[in-house]
Image (cartoon, rainbow, N blue to C red; front, side, top):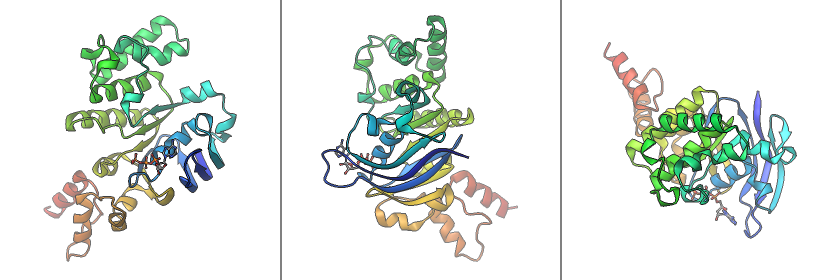
Length: 281
Ligand SMILES: Nc1ncnc2c1ncn2[C@@H]1O[C@H](COP(=O)(O)OP(=O)(O)OP(=O)(O)O)[C@@H](O)[C@H]1O
């Protein structure tokens, strides 16, 4: 069933000469994780801004086509309902922090406070999220003095606290080390298991291979490939536009042309391991 629908979307920012999104149509289903990939400047963040409703509500510009959420045009949604239905984790965590709260605890509570959630429920919810993310050491800290990686975790916490049904996450691991990246992806997987619909911009293709159900490739404003993850990210044509494909997928391609191909095309290490173990009996 279509949950979010883009219908022939084209968009130009007020000050840009060029159209930044070009005739994009796609249907997103509830509870799936969608990876959005593509070269720099292709339009991924702009697409996120659109789905979050920042375009056209915050940015002007020229927009044609429709964004429907649960069948209703995004322009007809009440802005406060939209803000709670869709959580957005910005690419730059420095812009995510409100700047008006003195502690991380208050910062995480801010969205719930704005919604007028009862104090006790709010406190319990914030504590729950802090434990979930393992950021107990940050609660008393000044959010304005955190490192990029810490801000990224706090941004996650703030959004999870809101319990939005749709999460638009723009490069969540750009400021994180490998351990932090793996922790964040465990959280994203947990959110998916809770039935959230997740749109995730991420350059790390191995993570997309492992976690995404479907992938959209955006290049120069056009949706050039879209569909089921293994089909899209095993496409060697991606290399021509500067997108890497997982090493495991390259290995699978080699295997397909060998005398003993894999029974199933592998795009993650665990899938390749399974194929190899099968082969070994
Ligand atoms: N506020 C703005 N006003 C005018 N042009 C903009 C604005 N924001 C982005 N652009 C332009 O729109 C195009 C798409 O940018 P966007 O940030 O959506 O791409 P992206 O795929 O997310 O890039 P990256 O991977 O570098 O984050 C770029 O040419 C960019 O310069």
